[in-house]
Length: 174
Figure 1 (cartoon, rainbow, N blue to C red):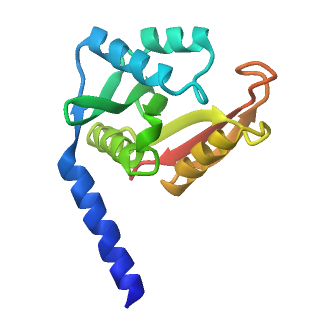
Figure 2 (spheres, one colour):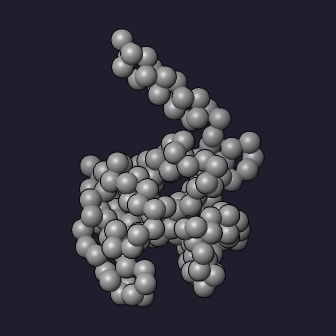
Figure 3 (cartoon, rainbow, N blue to C red):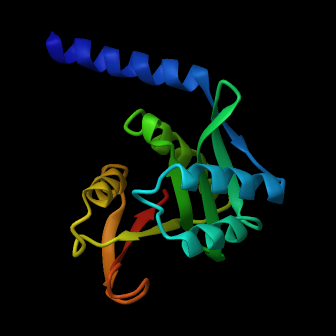
């Protein structure tokens, strides 16, 4: 009985979140950059390297891009970079810390996966900080990706410099 109550409570919260929050595709290149800049600068524990923020702000312009909007305020975003006909990457994703662990990231990834499925793109990858680095925030990030179906594939010890080893994770979109 208590498991059923928890399950119903979880579904109720998810339905409530989906009603309050909208996931909107952003087409305008400058708006993509503006949202990216605003959200990443609000996340210094994850995005504390100025040159990386500047690069992301430029990089997202040609990419597929969705923003999570709550009460006319952007609270998160995802930018998808299509590398080849059958593969794409979460180039960057950011959710305001006040909205972490509330389903926003899952909804953004779900929206991207729907687009990928509709366009016959079966593979989605993401790179994040490797477990070789002790950062606790990124431990949660890796756990998030694993919980939504991503599998660790390869570690790159120098891709982002020796101080920031990268982990590539992959998901098959069925």
